[in-house]
Length: 182
Image (cartoon, rainbow, N blue to C red; front, side, top):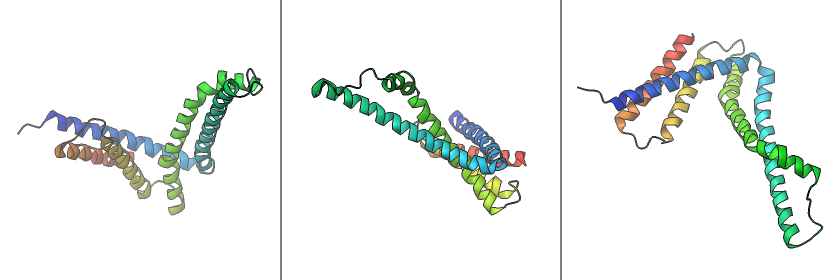
């Protein structure tokens, strides 16, 4: 009985994805737990700050656009024209806006992946993160993230055996990584 290459590829894709995610999440939780008072405030605050800056930039850009329309249609003295804030915004801040939004998104995702499990571990077992709760958090987060990747549907429809091979690789990869990190 020959095994289809597609199933083997799905098995290895799930295996390597979950192994990488398990290592990334495990060491991230350990770093956040080690620097807990500062890191639990820094990551969510960084995400909120980036999104506030992103929102202010979008509002100021809209203000400049509306101001330009009013200048051309209604009033002659309504133009902000060549003001220093406008020049500074257009030259330096506007090009950074996508990067600020991306940084906020990454900080938010890392807050969910690292800070929330570290706080759960801290409040559940105060002496230290080494133990079964850390392994359970790493396993659930890595399998969940791999499942979200697979179910996003970028590759098209999948057969039952393809799904079974991917999730088998995901579970084996996460469990094997957790056992190796003990």
